[in-house]
Length: 386
Image (cartoon, rainbow, N blue to C red; front, side):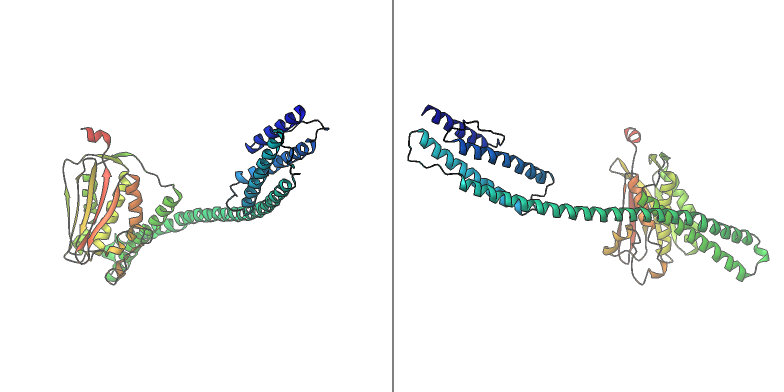
């Protein structure tokens, strides 16, 4: 009786450890014991469970559990195995208490449950193989797509080089010769003078288009560079007005500036900020009708920023275009602006420049009344302390 109870205690203790997740258990019972067959079957099941759970862990590491239908069958099979183990414990405890009427289950049901779980595991493994194959195919596609992207990026770089050298340089030469010929106005007929002036105007337009194209390419590739230097915004505004004054006057447009003398100097890229002012004033002159008015000014805003504005009395911008115009090739559609449309790149570049300086740009407008473009630029910390 003592040996029987000792064997039963070993089996019960081992099964409890199995139920707690320890599948490395090995029951050591004398081969002559009446419980030796049960112990041996449990040992074999534990060995199989260890192998099975190694595969389950691999599946979990790959996060395929939500994709593989067989994992539900594995979990259900494991619950059945655990239930059979618990039933076996109850039978063994009754035998240990002296109830010899009990007939120990020959683990047939336990083996059946385990075999069901193994089938589910095999199905899960097949699903895993299919998913791995699918992932390999997708990885190949991504590799090819990445290769193509690199080729396109190189093509874009080659195109930039071509634009810079093969288009801009001859364009500069054409413009230079036309300007040289215009210096001898007395020797030109009115017709030839008009032709040469058209060449210079169109050369400037094409040169601006090429510059815009190159700037967009730099923005998209992340290679646009900005200097950090002291910038006097009031001085830049005065200069921008002087550049566009004659053009505005030729269209009977009043162009004025409103700046405060006490505006602080900021840190930024002087040339890039001047580029923004030039673009905004150029657009204002282009779209403001004869007899109209354009105002550019700057003032302090929320203590830590300077707000610059360019206000015109042009046709205005409908609400649906007020964000679109800051995107690449975004332009206002309509009969009133169709003949005056630009490349659709200028405001995109302005937005990039302003945001790289830590500011923002936007437009407020009333159709038929005009538009006001606003941009903010941060004041340096040293200037704020003064």
